Image 1 (cartoon, rainbow, N blue to C red):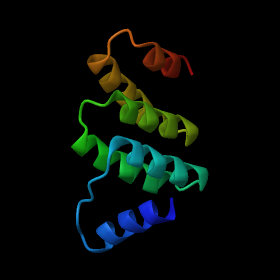
Image 2: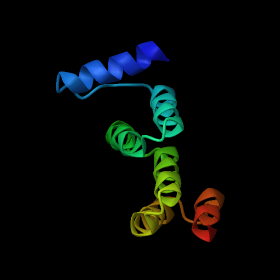
Image 3: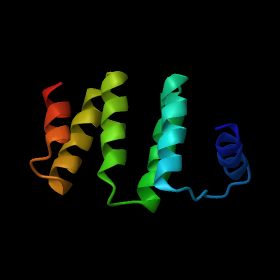
Image 4: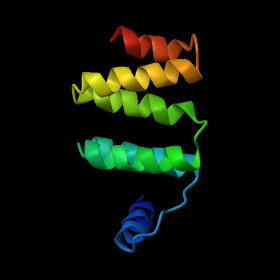
Length: 98
């Protein structure tokens, strides 16, 4: 994990947009969430969404963080976006019920 975080930090410090596999992005997001660094986790999600625009998982992770931080306006906006991309998705509907 340390090597992955170091790669991320080095790329950001150099002003380079890093490329990671989807699983690596999820590992980074989970790490920063576990450290309660939600702004950093959201930054990583934004990078992941640029590289993997059709991955619903990153939208769901973003919704989860917005709900956790009680940022309801952004949570609802992201839920609407997810619902447009994934109509009738169980995970999206469950997050909306929260």
